[in-house]
Image (cartoon, rainbow, N blue to C red; front, side, top):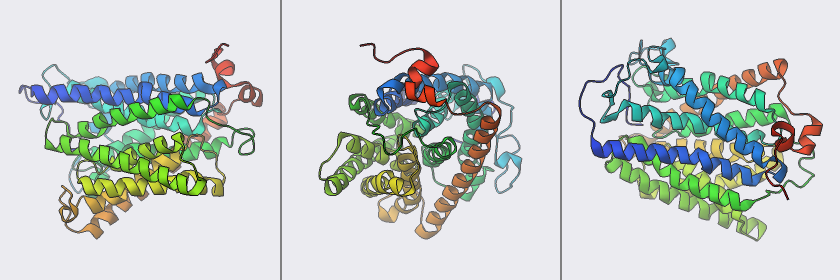
Length: 425
């Protein structure tokens, strides 16, 4: 992310029309990733009796986080009060509340060359999709009310601090470390993937897993959702330049290259191992490539993107199949295997392929040192997110309960929680 820190009240200078138009389009593309992209991607992979529950969760999270973002989320992430380069204090970990309820925002307020209102909405869509990603890990077994409470708490205590530490500007913990995360590999994907794994472990396996068949009920939905995610991701990555410029153009190119390479890598690996390439495999591979290139999209060149995509497709295939079976956890829709693992692969390789010596466009001259910085950022995020997510889930479990009853799980969450059916035949 090239824009930081956000000024408390920008000077009254006219916005650049081209940059503004692009950022409005990019914002719509990122929102498209959640609704309907992610919602359909997940809905197709669950059983028919739970299709509406997943759609409902994604829709409700979008509404909830949008409101929380304007109330205090934007301020917690981008308020720079009390921050100073090289100084570690409370504001290195979390922003203040000086911008709560968007205080100081005006029609003429700017961030770089675009209206601050557009930047706020763009960043809102990132905040929306991150908790929505977690839904795939506990699909088919969490109660709706506690799910909303969990998402509100997780957004406040996990997403906002990690985003601030990485993107908060001088004085932010991981910003000062020099962690490179152009569009959210750490903030979005590792963050959500680790939270998803913790949620899956706390809730336990679905009834009958892994002996009862739980095949996706409509892979057509999943392919449509994955396709919308792929298209929307150009807004996600290229939009993070916050300008219609060469950086945005290169981010667009490397996003396409990495996703295509990962889709082919997963498909070929599955073809070799299982003798047949699957539709679910190729779309999962494409998403793993999109995830992995996200942190590197502002610094890697096309050949770096090719390498990142190939690595992500292969590593995520092994993680979502062999390692998942070996460890026996029930991450329903492979949020950990694709998003956390893909995000880690991408974050580490960002330190390699940001180097101009390897065709990158970053300022990395010592690859070993930058890889260590990236690894440190990954490690901190994994530990912080895992611990904080566990505490939140356990608190809700002890006070409200998390999991639906056996009867509700058997009947399906569509009827049990929402009194509706996805299909009335």
